[in-house]
Length: 271
Ligand SMILES: Nc1ncnc2c1ncn2[C@@H]1O[C@H](COP(=O)(O)OP(=O)(O)OP(=O)(O)O)[C@@H](O)[C@H]1O
Ligand SMILES: [Mn+2]
Image 1 (tube, helix red, strand yellow):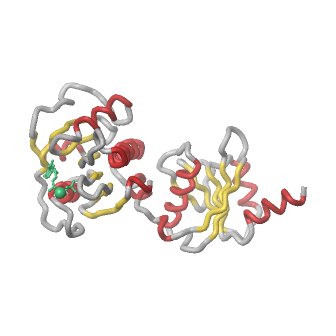
Image 2 (image 1 turned 135 degrees about the vertical axis):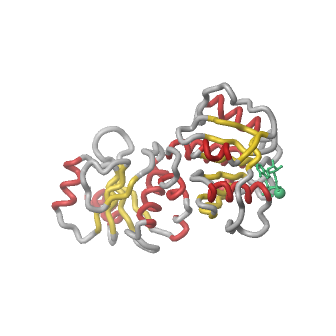
Image 3 (image 1 turned 90 degrees about the horizontal axis):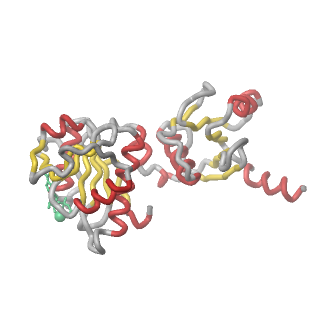
């Protein structure tokens, strides 16, 4: 038994913070009342327990790694933790009571921009996630083995449509399909071989494919070397409240833009 307690002791030794992922009221109270030296942070989709220190999870994330990564990144964004801090995460992997404790060391590299992308975009976080996942998947596999590029403009679709024009007939004209439907993901991948941007609404409705974006580009400052697709993607997010997710055909990276700025750059192979 002592070997077991030692094991848990090692996992929680010298931690600066305890992160309670979606705790029940009583679970939270136990920590709140204990007046620990460690900082107690609640990480959950809603602050149901009225925690003083709270990080919002944009989604519940079934995958524990993702859940923890987002919690830590959100805490970094709020300056609740810093590089080198060690955090003990209390999580629920199966149904019922908390059943896992995970030790994490905070690294500056965890500030990837994904938290900001999911939590602070105008579109629903689940819509951002679905589009992001399509872009990552396309980046990993390409289309029929060849690298492809793609430009997804998500949110504020009415305004985006006003700042763009069709390059071809819109295959989504009369349909009511949403990102996240498996069939839609297949369509997105198929249409990505063709020119222009996809326009997607706040709630994930596919509004159009083949849009040529014509936003004002003054004041948009993106890394040198990126071409017209990235410039158009960045600029439309300055001119509207949309978020742009761009897969580059030439370097294979996925980038996201908001407010005319690059907020994320990820290699799909490493994601
Ligand atoms: N204003 C625009 N609106 C929509 N799509 C655009 C726009 N400008 C370019 N594109 C699309 O981007 C494609 C690639 O253009 P370009 O090579 O200049 O972009 P890029 O930023 O270098 O992207 P990549 O890294 O994928 O090559 C074009 O073939 C076109 O489909
Ligand atoms: Mn190019």
